Image 1 (spheres, helix red, strand yellow):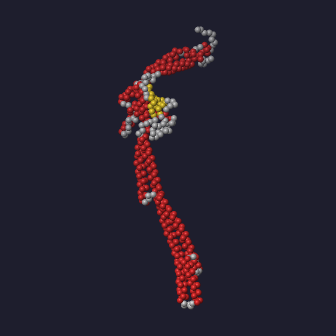
Image 2 (spheres, one colour; image 1 turned 90 degrees about the horizontal axis):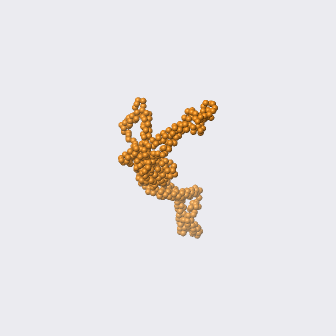
Image 3 (cartoon, one colour; image 1 turned 180 degrees about the vertical axis):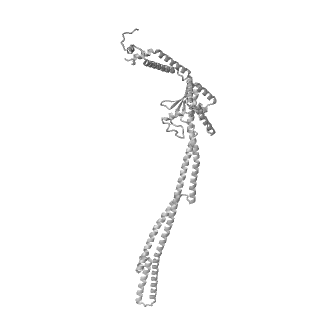
Length: 498
């Protein structure tokens, strides 16, 4: 074995050789732990328990419905609990006497080590904040602040120093697998510890409620301003609709359009019938003209031939002709009866010609009347068509105006509903957070923990002493055993004396 090799036996030899060093280090560690423990002020701990309900008690809205079930909700609320804003609410709620008691407790809670640590930090900070000319940068900042005052900038801090200071004794601890959070406060005064734990919890509940009511109040003010313009828009849209209806004389546009459309359909049917009648009259006129051109007798013309009057006259003519033929064979030409028969026959033929002329004139007049009726119906149809188109255009305009009115009304109603909701929400006094247990005044201090601190001091000093002993035993070469001697001088060992 070489002299640098370490085994269990050599470790024990080294520790035995440095037993006094280890004992001195242990004693020093115990002394330091005792001194630190002795100079630490006695701190009393009081705790208030808060419960977070995941079902909102607010009847007006499902507030934070998504966040309440999120894993980060409790963590977010812990951050709010430990914020300077809540601490400032605590300070604002304290009386002057309570502030004095709190300051005294906070000052008493500052240990000697804390003072020494703060002094070292201030010294180091002053070194880094001093430039080569010996002037501190804080002075420049002061001049900037003065310039800011001249410019009218606010110089008062938003949070008091006491609000930042009191957070030192505050500790927020969530309980595992539950919705309960423990708000504990450490103070040298047990009454202050219990008082601060409760007042921090109450200030947090008030802040949490304020975080809901303040935005709701801001929304209420905004909706109230918007409602004025929305109400004006609704009134203008309704006024446009009413003015247009009065201008056009339209009360119920749908009924008027249906009535006029029905009239247009009737005129269209009448026009079709008139066109058929005109075509029939023109056809009959054309047949009459063909008969006249051909030189044929009009008696053979169908309307004349089928006429009952014509047929009766023709029958009378045939009878008179028969009587004239019979009488002519026995009577002379100038016989009164012959003359009478000839006169009657001439009258009958004259009536026949008049009836035929009447029929032909009726055909011509019927054609003209059919054309005139068709033209008048067509004109009436065009006018009715224009009227229906105007009514439809008016109906479309009214529909647009009505949609504008409905849209303006829906927007106004939605804004009004939201205004009512936000108005009620800005006045709610309920939150989903409740206090389970209020803090009790502690009877025994929570810190310092003497046994724990001494145990840490003993353990740390023992580790340090053993480490120093092993370091010296390895780095400083000494003879601890026969093997070290043999390895050191390089000759066999003949014996040793005890």
